[in-house]
Length: 231
Ligand code: ADE
Image 1 (cartoon, rainbow, N blue to C red):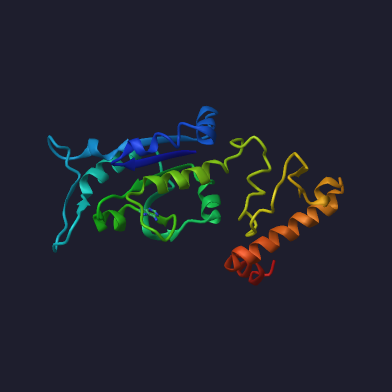
Image 2 (cartoon, rainbow, N blue to C red; image 1 turned 180 degrees about the vertical axis):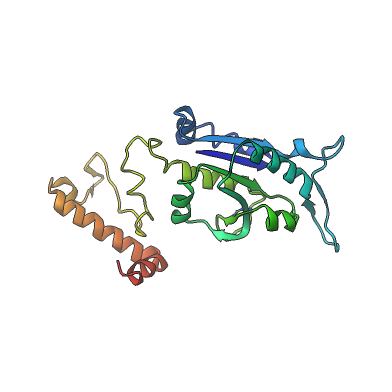
């Protein structure tokens, strides 16, 4: 899979992709992330990429042409399955969107800034608009990193333990059950007996019931969605 991220602040994306799982995915050739500096496509000596908004109002708006030029260049090299704009007014990102994106070959993520980008880019080039939550970030870079992480870790071979992405919270609309490791007792705090029992049927049942309890208590909306879908 290949992800091209378009941004005015490429430095913000250096960290997330140079460490841990995302780095391993790149080293194994499973995911390529390319970060493009939109500034390089700006106008004139100052590489201008934004301008005042028509109709007045505070804040600069990213112009069509620099984005268009970069998009045209990328699209001339390969086909893209999605051109995503990350924005607080997009569709809320969730595990099922991550799952769907992990099946794509090539995607572009465009990060917004300032007051936003000219609406015509959104109308004519963007195929999907995604928000990572109901709060406003200073730009789309952290959202692009969150989406890339959630998607890349799902690619076969990226995680060491093949089953671990499937048992994540949310994969079956349930939060994950609690986990414990050694020591089995610390300051009198004991690990639940069943986990030490060696009885795998009982352990599975305990994990399922803890996952359900946690979901009901902490995320009633998720629980209602699950139970109303007839599972
Ligand atoms: N850009 C600014 N805030 C954002 C958010 N919540 N999600 C995605 N992109 C954003």
